[in-house]
Image 1 (cartoon, rainbow, N blue to C red):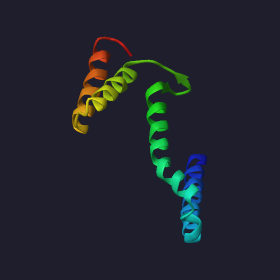
Image 2: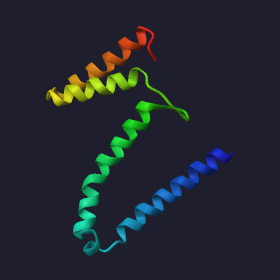
Image 3: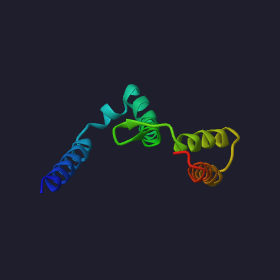
Image 4: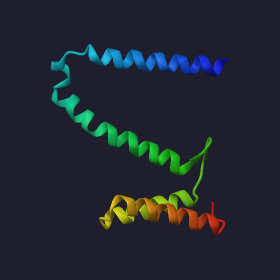
Amino acid sequence: MSGWIAVLTASLISFALKLAGYTVPPARLEHPRVLRVTEVLPAALLASLVVLQTFSTGTHLVLDARAAGLGVAVMALLLRAPFIVVVIVAAATAAGLRALGWG
């Protein structure tokens, strides 16, 4: 039952924060420093999620096929490949390495 309490508490906190966001005066949101932070925040959050999902399993750091897939994806992006190609090449790399027994 404590799992449900945690989910409900997190949901209420999330809703309260979203509601609080609507009460912030627009003048505060148009401040140059706030604009700079809000422009880079989504990219920083996405980068942290990618790193966390790529290099960790539970509480351990790992270096496996996911890291190789990420490396191939970065190389494909640098070569200006379309996004779907980047995803397919990265997934194929990770799957191939796993099939060979690495990770």
